[in-house]
Amino acid sequence: MAYADTLYEKYYLEYASYSIKHRAIPEINDGLKPVQRRILHTLMELDDGKFHKVANVVGQTMKYHPHGDQSIYGALVILANKDLFIDKQGNFGSILTGDEASAARYIECRLTPLAKEVLYNPEITEYVDSYDGRNKEPVSFPAKVPVLLALGTEGIASGMTTRILPHNFIELMEAQIACLRGQTFEVLPDFPTGGMVDVTEYDDGIGKVLVRAKLDTKDPKNIIVRDLPYGSTTESLINSIEDAAKKNKLKIAGISDYTAEEVEIEIRLARGVHSKDTVDALYAFTDCETSISTNLLVILEGHPRILSVTEVIRHNTERLLSILEAELELEAGQLRKRLHAKTLEQVFIENRIYKEIEEINDIKNITEAVRQGFAPYESKISAEVTDEDIDTLLKIPIRRISRYDINRAEKEMRDIRRRL
Image (cartoon, rainbow, N blue to C red):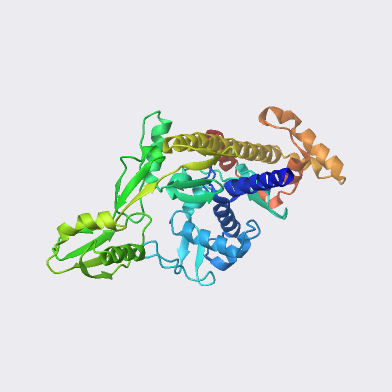
């Protein structure tokens, strides 16, 4: 039994660690679960500005995600319906009615410009081997915004759950600005389904909120539901109202759903019952009012951690600074390389170094002659002249040399120095 217990503990811990780190819990740096990251990575690889069949995206994502096409398809639809990083074309279902999306072969998607702007920079992204070693996938994207709080998410792993509510994107940007300025800030949930929310016990993301449907009671005989409480659909809300009516908690004559782009559920009240007298019962006995407990559990430095909204924003803002610094260093390196190439070209053409190789046939001697030709101008050149540099210069066409514009070249170099 001791051996069996040891085996059980070993394999359970391995499974628990896998489900926590690689399936259900989002990573704090880019706010994504592995399947979401792999979907976006696939879309970045496929990106040509055009829409792609979701079936193709799902198939390509399976190179990175070994858990079946249905898990990828479901995650893609949910992520697309967040309306942040994926453009949709076709029927992706409805977060209002709960209607399902069409089959993957009928719908299309592509990356939004926002995704490419705030997530994608392969030159500063760390990559690892995919599960079969055939491809490379990102450890996390260099996200410049608090994706975790913008999207919100839910996940269940072994002994752990996470539930993070979505927040307003602009308010998150304002919070990051306040954080950079050393000012205090507060960010509260913002729901795509609208409704009303009581955040008294939100406790910076580790408490709970009370969400309510928005009810229109102008007509004394009818109540119109205009907004849904977060987490509900028109179907689930109607079912809860009908269940309450069957239990004699409410007295209604009928209920109709006219929801299209906006929520509109008409509740027709029974004779002698007035709308203002029914509101409290709707909130008390139906899903018109629900309580949502939050648990901001994330993967931080390889381990699960419970954080507050403020801590997440501070972490993402600190990471933003390091990302911007890395991007600036990368750009500076590219500018220095470009300036070096422009300087060599200018010296090579203006001082007619190319004339010194007209009578030389051996490539080694040509290379050495060009290098010697640069010797008097070392003070102008900021880096070593390599064989690759010389090879590039030797490939300049005669037509380009004859049309070389000194003033234009000087202006380009001044612009580069100014940017540096």
